[in-house]
Length: 123
Image (tube, rainbow, N blue to C red):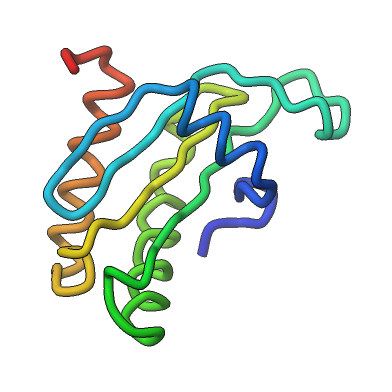
């Protein structure tokens, strides 16, 4: 599971990442990325932690399917949060196909989207 200190919780943080960040779409998900965003509500730290949040709508499936997708995405992001620059915000939005996707497919799509965003690939 993704530790609590790395999770986005406030609506404003989600809005900042989605509206002011870059995005990369894949067949099962869309990743919104805001680099180096500072959080005025975070306790004073020399380097703020990168944080990630997840959006899984009812279009993905019923409650069981949505919770499964969220758990998978949190687990996948746990291993990748160290790759993110300090203070960055990431929002992973699951698309309807994510409910039927295998774990490996979600991992490939997340890796591809993060590589595109962190590597500065073309939009």
